[in-house]
Image 1 (spheres, rainbow, N blue to C red):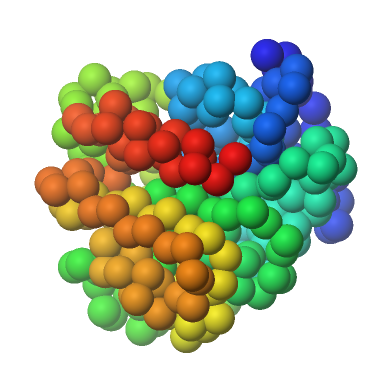
Image 2 (image 1 turned 30 degrees about the vertical axis):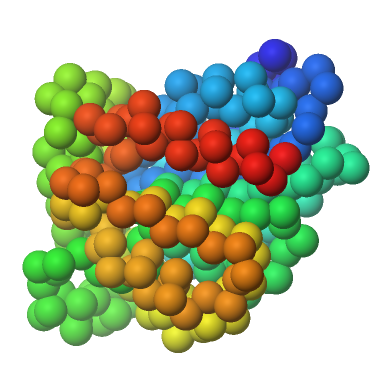
Length: 278
């Protein structure tokens, strides 16, 4: 396994941090898109399993996140459509760097929503998609008032800190929550109004177009996820016209399934899905 780090300049001049784990004789490639507030370095334990399987993994820190942020991470981006353009450009690079093998997409949380939106809007040639706790429907208990006025706040006060995520809901393992909170590359302050409103627009678009989703897909979600709604995964699973689609809900599972109490089982499900398709 060879680990590479570099940067990529986006269509609008921003620099994003990229990293990749390359296999000597890859059987497949994967572009991984991380969740809201976090960064790509939090997936190395999953990456190691994928590389053992022969999958070369590419990932990046998104706009306003991790090492791509200017200064401290702020989780801010102007438009989710810009994020989709980043994914499209980087997925193209993945396929050019590792040609003639199946190319897959993986997205967690916000990244899961972005990957779903990317598939629906850009129609990429991908061998399959894994969506982990994808942001397809707002979490239960999200303020109706905030959603109603979110567009106005986003327009006039885009960086207003509107909604704070409850870090205790990422995992049932206290040590994992502490690791998350103490990571300097993780953004834990309230989410900017523009970011939140763009994600709401994205989720509504996914729900509207869900019946057009046609790629092989594995959807995994925890039944007790308090940050993204498991009903969103159920909506996409029910509406997608994919002939190859799987939905697995983990009982009592929290948001970050690969860092939760059932993580070994979750990773086995992911690896098992890959083995059947690589």
